[in-house]
Image (cartoon, rainbow, N blue to C red; front, side, top):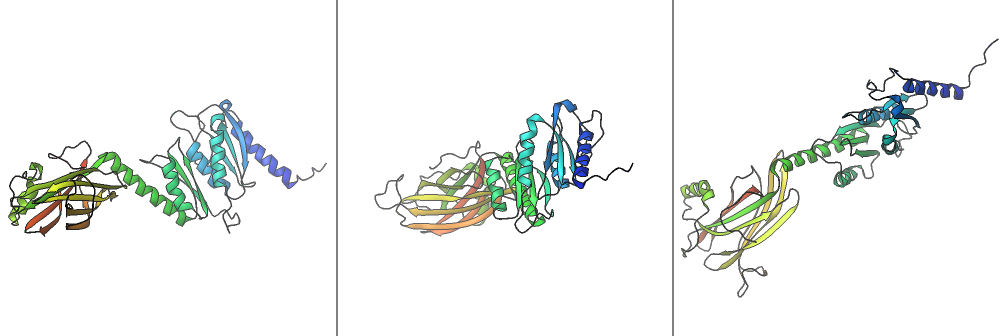
Length: 346
């Protein structure tokens, strides 16, 4: 008797069932893409089948295997891609089921104009120094907003799943590299402060303190250039987190009351510290209290510059004549716990 042929629908069902049986069978050597072996008993897992609409089952299976493939004692999910039905069969611990479904939902999205062609690929990026938090989510959204692709943060395993065309993935990966380098610098140097020192040569008054002793190398070099007998007009210390603007103002006294201000931003530049800084010095308005309010009158000097500097290195950013004297402005990036000579402005 001739056996009637199977309908295509029934054949697909039987194929999927066979794959499921291979996953569930005790001692089975069925492997997910990537070739990992089971590391937990089948009883610890439950089988889930996910039919995909827009993304290749092989790509999703690879992403699931990389993310949920076990480690640190956690039971591994076992994943098989069924290309005929564009489905993934996941034998997953019950505790991970919600995470698996969230990732699949994030990846299986129709690209505008893409028609579900399956050209989009999925990449897993370990986060290194970065934390998969709301700030990272916001940064990646700026890259993906309005673009044809998706991303998903895996907080437990400190990774990001990226999908999209090669150009979009490359842009996202470059962002992650920049953020990781910045975080590496932040972890290395800790909390930072910027120190501004205003030194003056040629003052008539002699009751001002000498230049701070820790700037001896700077003052010695300036003396060789003819700028000597430097006195401390003012010193300002300000907390300066990376990539956040800082600003502070302090008092100074030359032959008349003065005020000095510093503002700018610290950043990471190729693994070093970049400082964009603006310095201002002015005479206080007549009757203006030294610690109050600021009408911008009697400007002595103003400068703006950008430098790259090692931590703790004193940098002369300006030497300028001021009313028969010579003013020298020195900046220094310090760890917050470091102590500077001797007084500080507000």
